[in-house]
Length: 172
Ligand SMILES: CC(C)(COP(=O)(O)OP(=O)(O)OC[C@H]1O[C@@H](n2cnc3c(N)ncnc32)[C@H](O)[C@@H]1OP(=O)(O)O)[C@@H](O)C(=O)NCCC(=O)NCCS
Image (tube, rainbow, N blue to C red; front, top):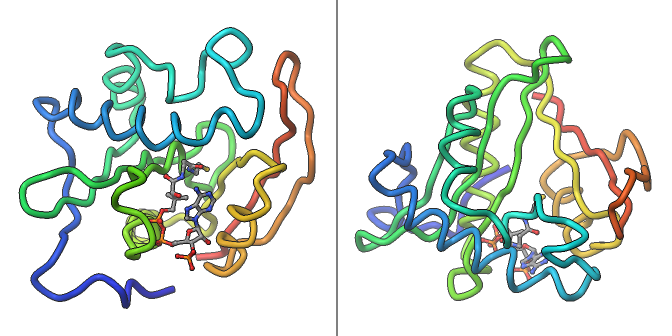
């Protein structure tokens, strides 16, 4: 995995401080808000989707131990991801809610955030980075496959969700 499209002296990886959680929430709303309609996701059937988060969710995830990693350029937050050790699976880190706002896509920021999460997970002694994705989002699945992820569980159904979930893992 590389972040070849991110130019030296350009966007950088940061830990997002609490003062910037509102800006981060804007990025999450924009990134996921652009996708939800394609998968029948609404605030009613999937209130847990980041498109519908209120201001309490980010501090709650960070309080549970997730690191909130961002990519920033020209003082603006362009993307973010939550990463942290799995509570149930020893040796596994989870990647959650990866988001790059539509205006910043296709420049390698998403890959940069995945690479940074993998680096931190490896440094913490994890052997595996795990993510759950909307299985119907084939483009996303292909992208993760390009980054080295393999599907470990396919089309799992969760009560109440209008889509199925693929679980993917990257060996670190
Ligand atoms: C997935 C996502 C983070 C990629 O961000 P990015 O900065 O564009 O990623 P990169 O530039 O590193 O890689 C680009 C690749 O991502 C994939 N991609 C980009 N936008 C996408 C989208 N809307 N849906 C699915 N895959 C997408 C494509 O394969 C793209 O390749 P291309 O540039 O050759 O077309 C971004 O599209 C996003 O925020 N999507 C909405 C939220 C989401 O689904 N997050 C994943 C949760 S598991």
